[in-house]
Length: 144
Image (cartoon, rainbow, N blue to C red; front, side, top):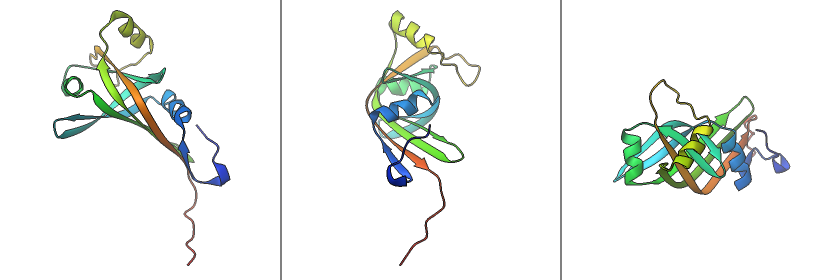
């Protein structure tokens, strides 16, 4: 996932296209939800397509929280031996209900991590992405 860093800077602020490239090539992330004054962060496996994020879920807290407050933040990152990246996507989530939407989501191949029934597909309509790419290296010496 290497990106070109100008002037050999170790941190690159990603533009929207670069953020979506990261999201489209990453399969695991975390979904941030808020219900009343409680914050929750849950791991999900996902697929990003057409500037939207899709995942599966089962009945329970996550699904209930999304219906109460659909405003979410989604984070995906990765770490390799010489580089890392992190992308945040902010938007609104909704459970897919129309047959054609569910069929599309099923076609994405979003398989559950564990062998449990996850019968609901959720789409996050993203309105903003931000991200960073990092190149690892030695800690610089401080000159006084």
